[in-house]
Length: 352
Ligand code: NAD
Ligand code: IPM
Ligand code: MN
Image (cartoon, rainbow, N blue to C red; front, side):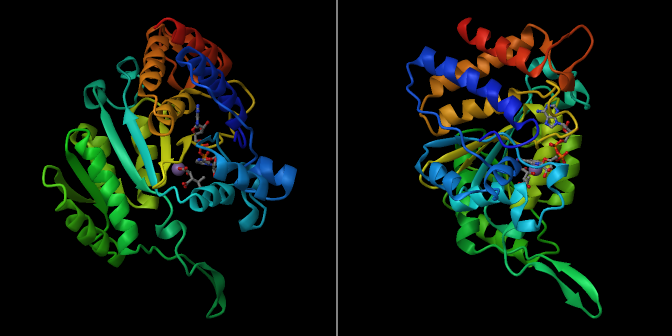
């Protein structure tokens, strides 16, 4: 589902890479194209049309580019591209959003932070994706005391917190066994419950060192000393914001992939960035985040860790060759287009 803006450009490159990696690995894939976001609204009158819903429901895995753009901002709220993305996440109950922020050593100088602050960075943000302030009722804009009043509700049930906490602990068990739960429990009741439930789930994981941090401090700590973190687990909106900040630690938002999983193992894979209308159609978009999302797809939905590793190694080799899209470009590097980067990745897959 390519979506809008740079979505079609980056998905085209990612599909080239996927097809080659599948060929190498003897993986048989049946690939369908689906409409989502503004593109779906243009073609079918809705950002998440029924036909797309049916495709999504029969897929083992979904690759999504990005949605949104200025031309859609005046649409009524329910028809806006972003509603399509929220719709598919909610429809498939993709509550567990994994956003790994890994610094490729070749990009240490592309980060706006000092190389010693970010070198060796490998952190995982586990973001709750189908609840919290994005979805809770009531919400709306209405007349109150002679003026308009806009409101949302930031609610979580115990079971919603429990299941995302468990994903956080399980991820930590496979890594360095440190989990930091990020909330705003000094102010919000929903966070008070969050913290209590995370503590309770933690009792099932005595080996994991659990800590709690307020989100404002977490934002500061991510920039001050990001390597203190192993896994962070947090609510929908806090995770949205912190993961964009974490992306910049890796050199560019164009480097950060994500996996959104439900309890049946179906996954939606997408870069964490948006449709980047400012560079759409110019061949400037970095397709790496989308390509790395394919690696996550191979790992989490297609059970081919071997091919995921091969793909990630190919990304490393292309960076070694000095090829860079504009977002990560620097002295002595070779500037390439979105397509040039895709071609280089395909070629690097064969070098393994
Ligand atoms: P954005 O992530 O699209 O862009 C932010 C900045 O990062 C821009 O300067 C853009 O050029 C740059 N950028 C993003 N991806 C890049 C890439 N792959 N390579 C190089 N540079 C890249 O965020 P925004 O500008 O706030 O939002 C634009 C639109 O995208 C909005 O309609 C928003 O709702 C939507 N959006 C969609 C998603 C999604 O589909 N998952 C995520 C975020 C924003
Ligand atoms: C993301 C995006 C989306 C979100 C928007 C476009 C609905 O910012 O995937 O991070 O807020 O989840
Ligand atoms: Mn976001």
